Length: 310
Ligand code: FES
Image 1: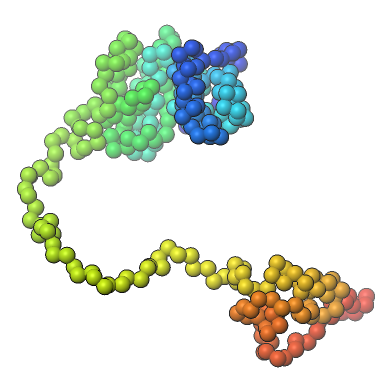
Image 2 (image 1 turned 45 degrees about the vertical axis):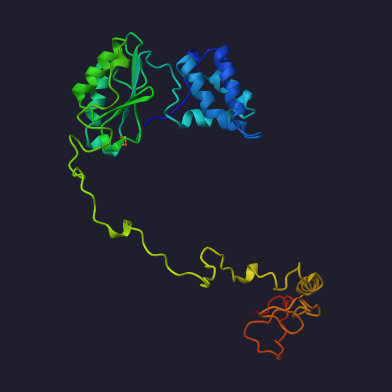
């Protein structure tokens, strides 16, 4: 997998605009999204720009960013993330994207790449001599069960052998790509097992008594309490609104801050906070380890004279 960058400057056209038909289509597509969500049209618009010019140019990205009121970098991120967007000129008749991820690799994708190197160009994303073909390696295309496979434009060609890929490339090179059967290239229906079905082939009616009408259970008068499943169980003190906080007892909280700053000992607790578990009769939170009714010794926070050890 290579780093995806925009094409070099010499390939970039100065301007981009949708042709008349695509401009109408783009406006209609943008209107499909709710007010304020028009940026969701970025992928369809980029794809349309690619279908119009063959690849996604920098000026197309700029044009779409302006159209959707998006930052240029946001559209660039989308265009460079998806390998479905071509950032350089590609073959006019076929751009072969060979899946090189593990399942396809184990089933022979490296041999498919050798075919592309032999018939198109040694390096990915380089055109052949006539400019009609190009290739690149991509990550999983979601057809692992029929590995190895390639994507050519919008179609997948699966269960490939090097020989079959050579035939496919030759057909596209001859301008007859539409004649090539898409999907599995062997005796397989979509992603079903190879050959004829071998399971669930007998048309036997299952013997299942539970398919017969069953007598209804008597439910009259039955009371089923609502389940507590899914209800939040929140007993954390941080979220217990009844515990005293600067919000529930602002006066006491401010007093505590003053005392702490002066270093004069235990905070004042004269304000009454809402009754809560763990609070004293006055509303102040009970201190851990100090029995009710006892006073915790005061702690001096004044700095000690210099030279005195702690
Ligand atoms: S690994 Fe090739 S399609 Fe998934």
